[in-house]
Length: 354
Image (tube, rainbow, N blue to C red; front, side, top):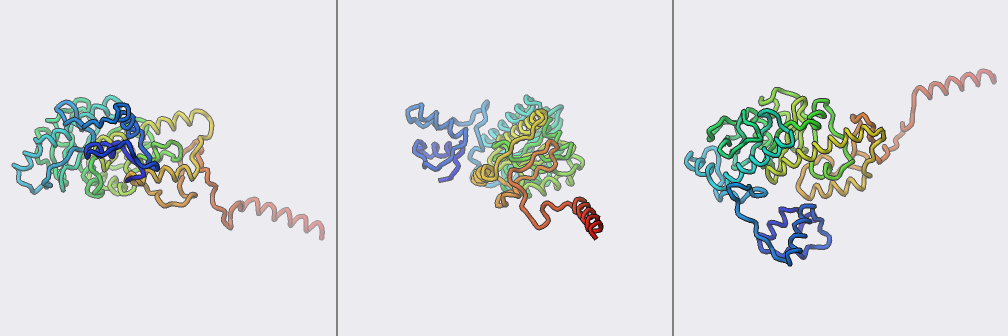
């Protein structure tokens, strides 16, 4: 049994007919998992069965994929059958739903933003170009191979697909990717500042952030710079551009990371206006969060680091500092100018004495 149990874990236990009312005492439940457990308890132990995906409501998480793994080399008839199957339809509906949320939250403007879901060894379903994310329809989606070639779909695939595909090629765990332009976190990207850490639990557990240098959107160079970071980070600020996230669970989780980083960056700017140095976690508190993060299968470059290496907030102007004091060394507290002044005064005093 996992130390941390997510909503998806509970749902899989319910589908398997397991009794979720008797979990190990040391198990940690995520908030959404706790909500489901309360629902089960309030219904006198009845275990609800997840409804089958409908044409109007996408299912949560990825549905069970076809038994045969498809590739870009599969016969076109098989690719077409898959692309129009209930499984693919469900994934398309998920993308449409996430696009609607992005648009409603003003994370995208015009026809900006794009998403992709890996559906085979080297193929993915992605959004089209020149379509608002607030008005996506399942029939708008495209099927592409990992070189960016469009295999199926009436509309042309997104112009930034190469970045999504390079993420998936570099990071085998990446099932889904989401790119958009949320204003507050994009502001950090424009300023070239990685948001400071050690302040809000959700940020520490669910995202790991880095900045990729600017290159022209849609170019292989842009995709490579982002892909170089995804082994240790699941949320990349694209300098002077926007944000891209990836998930090993599904497109909704990739979208959630957008909500989390955007809310966090907005909170930081509010905190900076209060005129006080922000409070930060202790090293023990942060280590607890990183343990949860690691048990959920998320990436983070801080796993295994020492206490004094966990926080690095020097770029944040309001002056956030880690609660762990810097390690004392042989030169700790040494000030060359002060030392020279003391030596000069000492020489003057000794000369007067002589």
